[in-house]
Length: 312
Ligand code: CP
Image 1 (tube, rainbow, N blue to C red):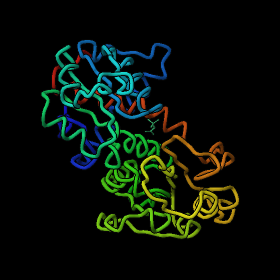
Image 2 (image 1 turned 120 degrees about the horizontal axis):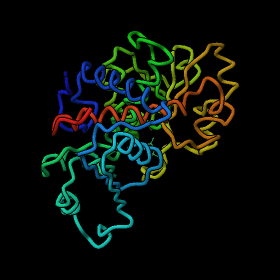
Image 3 (image 1 turned 90 degrees about the horizontal axis):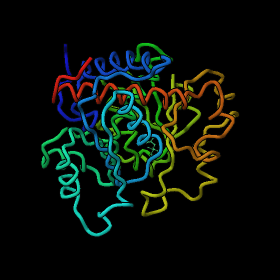
Image 4 (image 1 turned 60 degrees about the horizontal axis):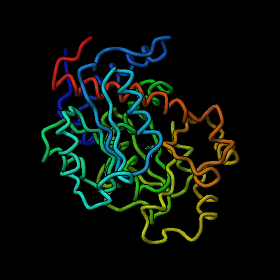
């Protein structure tokens, strides 16, 4: 069986196109499994996985936990805000204590960019990055691209626009890498203050006018404004941001073309997207969530197969 070129999933950077294709083929098989009456396989019954979350999460945490349970892994959950981290314990000490309980895989979300890489260099276990600060969110990008392929087919030559708070977004960076590996063109749109200059070196185009950006796109990924990561004010008011960069039915009617609309969640309804658009047929937001479980099953299955031979 072919396998991933990596032993950890730290980011999309570092993966190959063949890795992504293998992950998607495996996810397709698991998607079929989770739509059966019995949604479970014994593939990881000898594997123990710790979900270690130093930052809040709804989708990613539940999706990983469900993926692990669907694969029959043993699962333990750790939330920093209910732990001895509050008593001053370090990241490495925390994880080493968890690993002393014979854990095979650590799925970690952390507010600091590079935290997953840091950990992978210090502990002898498989690390899966569930989001590290403003850096990467690889499983989100994988489930986004997988969902897009379901709706658009081959992404080669398709243009995907990522709109909003690129500066503070780990979803944006991971999406840029994944979409480019799959041959898509990536366009960024938002206020100049939220698009750092260095991203143009990644081979993306930038358009600050949302209507122009939408007209030239096949799909649009609407990002949340991440106030919790902002030390400064990057635009005059939320109202003005919504007027210029919020996706509304009016704007979609103006461009007179069908677009596939993604959002990684959580949504700020009425800011980056209106309820009418978020709940419309063009939006695939809940498909993304559904596919997230199959993608995370594929990630865990393929990485675990590098540390053991999972049961079939
Ligand atoms: N998309 C995403 O990462 O959502 P959560 O923060 O709820 O996990």
